[in-house]
Image (cartoon, rainbow, N blue to C red; front, side):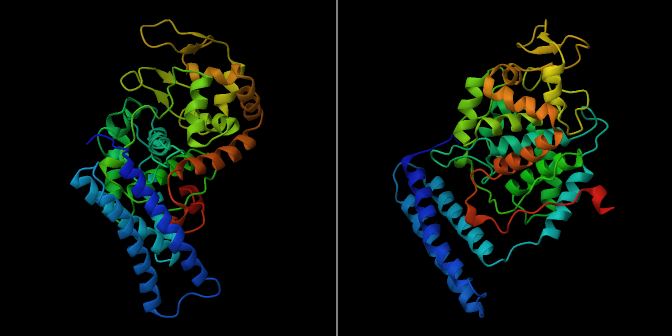
Length: 372
């Protein structure tokens, strides 16, 4: 089913947001001093949210520019969102230790002798990144809330080539823990991959719900490595990031490599593509880079070993005055980079998720080494 950001769909989303704004503050006021003392109070609160959800869904259902199937799915989505908000407000959902078990299962799957450089970590970071980076702050569409990369056409967008590997890797974990949403699973996998690669601790919290194919976003919302600073700003400003945050997020290129059968580009950015470091920035400035002579798309190679690569988008961090300032700072101070990356990656993977759906404050999960 093609993406359909119709006036009715936007109106339905607005109706649900309005309903949450009316009901959730009342629920919070009810918890100002103590939790409700009877189950009937909980039922009334949940019932209020359900009624609001039905109202929002009915508004959509009566619209004329969507198919009956889309209308039904929108009503179901409204119900899911209302349920998530109610469970969050009533503290009914899973505990941190439940998510630690999921984290551990993901961590156990990271090492892979037969995949790339021996780790699935980079592709899981990319899955979390690409499932979140479709967000548009202007209309609230996209982001990690609906896990829409499960569906065509989004799963077949060029920027998502190869991510089927990551989705299929996580599917057995989803079957083992069916209560976790795909959006929560994918973003938790990205956090796990960063932390297990000796990266920073990234705050994470659950609360995403799974949507439907009509929630898919149009192609072209993710960065194109062949383009430079103007393109990066267009893409990242749309999500709500500033220049410093753009540069910090680019540091994820410390992990992994490009593949000719996916992006068309080829090679790793660093000499340690399975370890999270600030080497990406250091190499940008310490190495001499030249255009690679080959039959593929335009990319750079290091002049010394010719084993590394940088994309035109990467090199823009050394040319743009504002970008360069931050990239230089991260090259000189790994701790600063780790701190800023943890903050901005947390922001990225929460894009598109209504705050009322989150079930707790963000917490950090322990690595396998910390648990042993």
